[in-house]
Length: 343
Image (tube, rainbow, N blue to C red; front, side, top):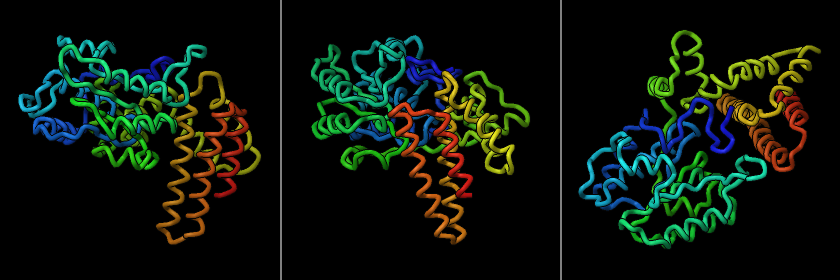
C-alpha cells in the first residue's frame, strides 16, 4: 500500500534516500557541467512523466551542489551520494538547513496529503531564504511537483523566481509543463527527461529488489511506459489485472459486460484504493487520447475530435468526483459507459 504520510509507493525508495539513478546520464552530465561553468541557471524545470526519476535527479544534484559549494571547484560529473557524508545524511533525513522540499502538505486529521501545494507552503520558501546560512552555502528549493501548486501558490513562487536571492537554486519538477503558468516556465531553464528504456527500467527495478525475468517481467516492462512508479503499481497493486479487466470491458458484448463493469468498479472504489484508482484514471485517459491520435492519423477528424473532447471531459469529471467526494463507483461506471458508447 502507499505510505500515507510520504505518498511513497510500496517497494519504492524515497528520492532523498535513493543512491542510484538509471537512464538519465545526459541530464546528469548537463547539470554537472552547467554548474561547474559558474553560469548555471537559478531555476531548472525538470520535465517528464511521473515516476521516471525527476525527484531523484533533483536530490542528487542538490547533494552535488551542497557538497561542492564553489562551482569552479566541483567535479565534472555527479557521483552517487556518499552515505557517510553529513550532507547526504541530512538530505535523507530532511534535516538539511540548506534545502527545502516543497510538496503537498499532510492533513493532520486524515493523515493524507492535501490536494494542492498551498500558498502557506510557498511562504516557507520566503522564510527559508530570509534566514542566514551558517555555512554560506547554497539555498535550494525543490518544488515537487509544481503541477500541485494552486493558483495563489503559483503566483507566490513566481515572485521569488522573478527576484531570486543570491546563491539560490530552484529545482522545479513537473509531469505536465503545459499546465504551468507560462510566466513560471519562462523563468526556468527546461530540462526534459524521457521515459526509461527497457534496460534502465529493469536496472532501476532490480535496485529496488525486483527481478523481472521471464514473460511476466517482459509484460510489466512493456506496460510500464518507462516509469518505475507505473511498474510498481503493476507489480504491487494489481495493475496488470486492472488493465486486463479494463480491456475485457471495452471488448465485451452482451449482459455479461455489465457484471464485469461492476466488478471492476467495486475494486477501484474499495477502501484504501487511491493508488490503483489513480492508475486506472491514467489508464483511461491515456487510452482515450490514443484513440484520438489513431483516428487523426487515419484521417478521421470527426472521430479524433470526439475522442479528444471525451478525454477532456473525463479529466474534468474525475477532478470533480475527487473534489466533491462523489460516489466513485458510479463515476467509474458512467465513464466506462461513455467510452463504450464512443467506441
